[in-house]
Image (cartoon, rainbow, N blue to C red; front, side, top):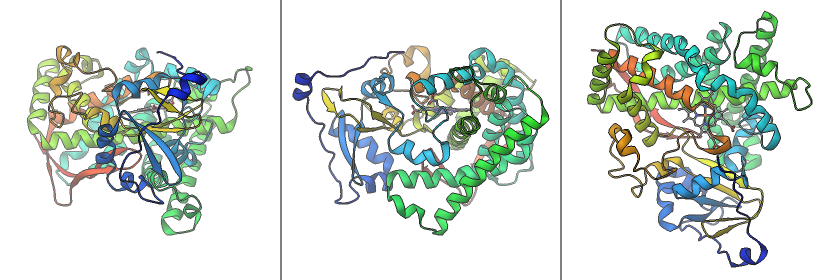
Length: 456
Ligand code: HEM
């Protein structure tokens, strides 16, 4: 990981240019309305205006970064911290003391606490749970009833994260509540990010009341999970035990608030991103049935007649490439923000201290300058000899640098296993009411996927 600071001296700073202002802003809302109305198209067009461009979002100026190289530089530089509109909108949910929102020494200590649960050697132990949850989907879908894929996908994601990282039956009953709460919270937070109307979100309108109810319920749930674990007196070797036993830099146990924020900061991004990606994978399998056929063939060759097990995953290379290509075209984390802690230089432009930066993995990963036939779903672009041609940082769905997702290996294993199991068992077709257009919130996913699973 590079930790290179690019702070210009006084004379250099004077010579640096201000990034161009993107066209199309409105007097009060600035570019926020475009970001709210068609954000994927808006973010995808920004590179035509420059490598760094200024946007106006409400009263604020935000700097959009549009090239793979410069987004990589932002993610790797210590001059940009986790902050900015995305994180402000998430703070109500994630608190300030969890790993996803903390900065500096607190963040480093927290990463050290959680890292062992995600390291490569820890993942095989989660294999049986991942396989069990994948086959539970196959069992449930056997009835041939219409599937509400949003519910199915988010349940699977919550159950895998919760059962692997916070072992215990107490999760089963709570998975549904977590899913419902998160759905309400994530759509409300996106609105707060792109249309920052501040105090208006405190007015007791039905949408705001619903948001506050979901937020309060999630906090109660997390307190219940922690209390249950303590009451049970057990200390399985998992992430929750690591959090409950973590010490601060003085060797003192960490506070209750930090434990609470940590559980939320891990459960929330884990469930939301994986749930969204399972939905996108099922959409891909529905719209490209030939991919499912090839996955079934690969599973037959590698695994034979027995059930797919975690140990098979590294040999299921075609299936993994389908997952990777899904993450390229439908990155669950489609937008990221940072804040400059000092005046810096980026691509020859001056970025003032305190500036908010924004960039879109979606726009970067679909850019025709980085990918031939970029709109085409082509898993073979991830064959080793072809993947070499992808420009650096043009494919970073888990980000890079010190904020890189700790769960990249965990998630790839989980998604590859689930895809192998369900695609070997079923083909899929849309049923009436299915709406596969993108639903854009803090994460990206199909809007309302309603499918029927057809046994092979
Ligand atoms: C498809 C699945 C996933 C994707 C695409 C994804 C993507 C990301 C990305 C892009 C970031 C970096 C955010 C930034 O740079 O500002 C991130 C951070 C994070 N992710 Fe994931 N993630 C996934 C699954 C998970 C899972 C399953 C968990 C936990 C169970 C998880 C926990 C976290 C945490 C705790 C952070 C904050 C890390 C830090 O700030 O140090 N993610 N994720």
